[in-house]
Length: 388
Image 1: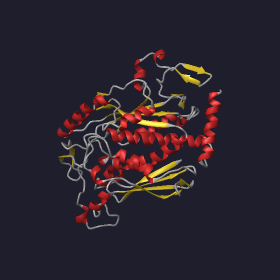
Image 2: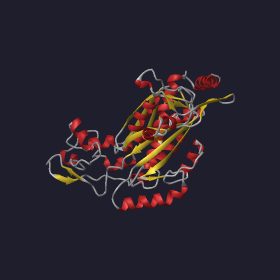
Image 3: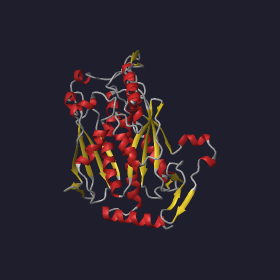
Image 4: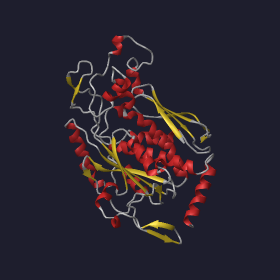
């Protein structure tokens, strides 16, 4: 399975084309719209979320509610585009109109300046439009499709925020993936410890009042993953490496870890490795999951636990200093719409890209022209692993 996305933040629409989805997968627009709505939610979101109510249109690859095996095309209309018809026009326009909303003062922390240098733009809006986090709309749409594949294989996925602007969230022990999904979905700030919710919301309010932004850490957990996805035979076959690349490709993400992650650098080996157990009923398992579901770049049957670090949103309502690319004079940076935080939404994006990588890996490993064939192949593999 592979996909491409296209579109700009204020362009007419966003598009994704996905190839390699098996035939016979039940899918509707509503299955995707649920996650698109989740991406736009969360406490602290700004005006753009009131303008856009994202709804997907499926224009190929699905007939009578089931995938056909052909390329699937997804579209999401940008309602805000109606205010940007001249600014974002495809055809050439008058120079005076071109200067309207032209950006020459790059924002620190964004792709504005480096993109202008790389592609030789005199209007940095070209960088801003494509590098915008609006692009993640389509990655969530693709991820929703991937999650439908995972669900058919009894693979469960959830995400939640574990650090909010430096405030660590205490996580109750023994939570299942379903527990995490349920608790986080009931929270406006996507935390599983509801006792911390009002504190976090008050913190976000203060950050907004200060004209600042905060980042944090989001965690995605996946249960029911088959043993042996990925491989140790080449560096680019390791599945944790593929997941790390996908997570770091999300706008504003600057770090990724699995299981104990960076804490393993502070512990002894005896405090890190997961002891192996066996029972006649369940086959092989582990006493702990410090390695986050991976050994040798392959899934070991334990839940995948992956965390991503999101930097604070770089667009500030009290902007930092920059330099105008035309005059080279110092100025405050351009201000576009911004939010004090987008951590709950970022978690939805992370969940989506993790699901997409896992679905892709499963479709590569197992016979998958159609869903019945895929489910049978996975069932046989699980039976083999259990009896190994």
